[in-house]
Each structure stands twice: as structure tokens, then as C-alpha cells.
Length: 382
Ligand SMILES: *Cc1c(COP(=O)(O)O)cnc(C)c1O
Image (cartoon, rainbow, N blue to C red; front, side):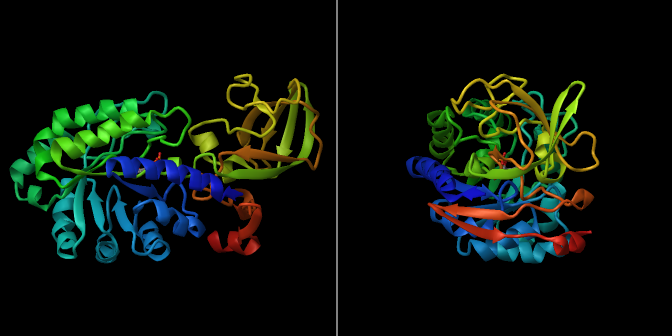
């Protein structure tokens, strides 16, 4: 269930940043492609960014007239003609791709950017989410840029902008550190550019995020280099705006404790729980491992009933986590996971023939069933 009022609240925070700084903020569709809400998102943001042709088409169709940007680690030759027709910005991941497709993009009126790798890790723990980690395939390092431009100096003229994306759920102090590195390493190229794109991973709508520091970073590029500044958050647009309702199918008493088997699966419906990994907040319960800090309390008493919550698939590790409740769980009871709008419906799958959840959209007091999936969807996807 997507709460459109919560999305609107996030959007107004992002719009405030745009209004105060002149920055352009885009939705990163890969985090949240719920196009039923694109008209509303388009009222606030400048447009969207895509990871390839399909997301670019989705923005083109469902947010018509708004800015459409695309980045891919490597574009396919057969996609380029359509992409440069429907996109306003295309960002390449290498000088090779820039030399193959840059002139064609410019001829079609599409602005051209290059993703750089400032080689400055600002996150610990999640190496798979760190494009600056050693061995990264993301972005051109300063050494690669210098040696490439020595061989093909004309490539610089194709560039309208620079793009970096190095953050994941981070605050603006990490952005500030990254920007310092970008200026130190790539500063000589900035005066040749029209814009700079700060990528995503900015947790702008999270409580406690330092927005004034973000705005100082934006102004530094605008005022210092005359650049238009783009940001393309995904999470921040739909943070804390979705709920996944699930039913308890069975309670099992094991030697080591109690487990509730749910009709939702971490592997199928919330894969980031296993990939990242993280423990999603659950209404009325607290995380057993961090005793309250991750779950929040509903104030209705002590939470001493401990359950492990697991999915109905064959995967032994299809476990969401351990939670404390203030009552004994019953079969048939409905549990509600929070913050389920982001990276959920875009990443789900039908492994084990698992049904996909319906998607409801809440508008004020009205609930609207937007999507319903059945056996035919499973059959069509395999
Ligand atoms: C993932 C990604 C985003 C959005 O990241 P969030 O963490 O959802 O804000 C933006 N741009 C690029 C290039 C990305 O890969």
C-alpha cells in the first residue's frame, strides 16, 4: 500500500531544496517506478532518470514533458536511436561509449554527460553499494580521463556535463567530502561544463538529514562554476511511504524459539532485506537484535514475545528477521512492514511461484487497487 500523502510530503521537502537553490531534482525510477504517481511527482520534480531504455520509455510515457535522463554502464547500439530521441540527457560510463554515441546524441539534441569515479569511498559495510570500491566498473577515474583525452582530445567538446553517483542512504557530510574530491581531481574540467549531476543516495527526506549542508554543496557548484546542479534521488522520493501487509500462516514452536511463517517472502518481495541486508521496521513490534532502536514502540506495553519471521519459499535463508511483540501472534493475523515503497515492487520476483502482492494506493481516506497479480503473471514471466 503506497501512501500518496507521504510521497507528497517527501516531494515538498525536495521541492524546497530546488526552490532555494535552483537545483534540478529527478526521480531515480529504479527505486520506485510506481507510474500511477508520476503525474503527482511531475508536479514537484523536474523529471526522472532511467537505467536504460525501458525506464526511459516509462518516464517519456508517464511524465510527458518533464526532463528524461538516462545512464547505463554500457548502452546497446540498438537502443541508442530511441534513447537520444526521448531523453534530454544521456550519461556515458566510459570514453569508449562517449566516442561511439556522443556525436549522435548531440545531433539529436540530447545533452551528453560522462560519469566519473572520484575514487572516494564514504560508506562502510556495503561494498556492493559502493561505486568507489576497488575494482568498480562505475565511472571514469581521473587517470583514465587524462590518458583518454590525450589520445582523443576532441571528446572533451562532446561533454555538456559531469555525473557522479557514489552515495547510498547517506547524509550531506558524505556528499561534501565527495564533492571536495571531485573538485580536487576533476576541477580543471568543470569550467568547460554546463552541469554537474550529484547522482542519488542522498537521504534528504530522512529525519535529521542536514539540508543546509546539501544546499551549500549545490551553491558551491552553481556560484563557483556556473553549473546547473542535478540530483537524482530514488529512496528519498518514496522513503517511509509504503506498507507491506502480510498474513501469519503458521506459528511453529522450535527448540530454539518461535517462528512465524508469513505469506510474504524476503527473497521474492523484499530482496534488499537479504541483499543489503537490513531489517525492515514492523508496525507494533521492535527488532529483537537492537531492542527498540529499529522498530519503534506503539506504547502498548512490554514487548517480550519473540518471533522469527520467515517466508513460505524453499530458501532456508528466507528469513526477514527476529522481532519482539507485545502479544502472542495468532495464525491469520495481519502484520505490516513499513518503508516498503522503495526497491520493492521494482525488484520482486516469482521464485517458487510466489504470488506478487496487490498494489494499493492510498489517497487521503480512499484506497484504490492499482495492480493485482495472479497466476497468469507468474506464467508469463517464466
Ligand atoms: C541508484 C542510483 C540512483 C538512486 O539512488 P538512491 O539510493 O535510490 O537515491 C541515482 N542515480 C544512479 C546512477 C543510481 O545508480
